[in-house]
Length: 104
Image (tube, rainbow, N blue to C red; front, side, top):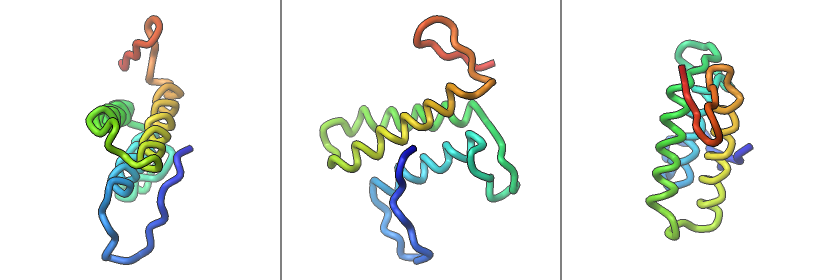
């Protein structure tokens, strides 16, 4: 599982690449039903949202290729891997042939 940087209760949290990827990862965990939605107070699974967040992170990986620090690239890759595994473990995700994922 991806290791997220620790964030304190400080309102002056520095927004950088790592915190951006971490926020997308947290949204993915919420969409996967791993963590509770803070608004509904429920663990809800939304396969379309997981897929969308994976696509965003994959686009970021492509667009930033060769321009990231080692720890940034590793965090991004771990977040993508973790969310892909959660997506594939979804009972709603079906595979049709090698490498293709179909959602109902």
